[in-house]
Amino acid sequence: MTPIEEQTVLITGATDGLGRAMARELAAQGATLVLHGRSQERGEALLAELRAETGNDRISYLLADFARLSDVHKLAEQAAGLERLDVLVNNAGIGVELDRQESWDGHELTFQVDYLAAYVLAVRLAPLLALSAPARIVNVSSAGQAPINFDDVMLRRRWDGVQAYCQAKLAQIMLTFDLAEALAGTGVTVNALHPASYMPTKMVVNLFTPQSTVAEGVRHTLRLVTDPALEGVTGRYFNRSDEARASSQAYESGARSRLRTLSEELTGVPFGAAR
Image (cartoon, rainbow, N blue to C red; front, side, top):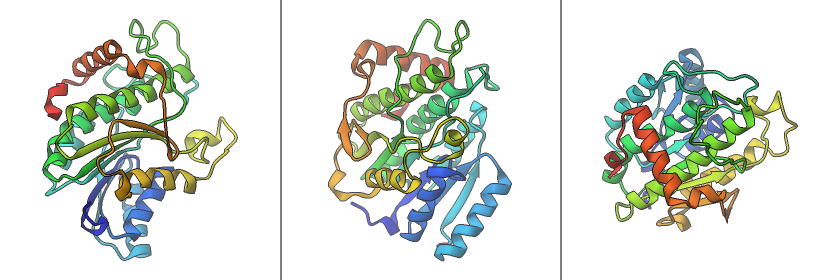
């Protein structure tokens, strides 16, 4: 395994909550960080804070609003131009929304931000990760999972914020399993996890009572990023630090095939580009 101080790690959703705390920990460990967010002002403040706290000046920031697929593609292009990429952490996401919203591309917002953006980045950056191998993709998912209704993925007929969130998180796990198979033998591992339950992040506190600390979520997520014992471990879903079984649809080849086809149609990125 490449020493962490020689690794380049891309973390999406790094200006808040779990992503921000992970960035602070990895900066202190000496990693080269590429951090993503959708506010230039907050991004600049984050860089200044991390550099002052850790003395690590190998930290950069890329701006992208995942409600616009054009921004996601731009982020993928920028990251693909890096000299190397050892870890992609797909962390950005939104929680349970009270009202249905659409992205600039006309897609249900949660599905785009929580899943389609991760699909684009993982598939488009897989070749660079393979060139940098051993490398890892870590998808921050959830224990909250629900089968995808392929007849109404965008929930136009019946909106439900919990369904929107849980199906997007299951889609992340389905992507994890597919990418692990596609990238077998390349030195790139792909795993997903539920980091902790109801951490006190902004997507939680307005709707739920926090049950776990952000530090707990960081510990479990960083394990998938840095633990040498997990080198070569791929295609797994973890509930915190324990390997677990995801919702049954994740293991249905037909459902995963339908999701791949839908993802290609919605993003314009062929799944085969990951190979």
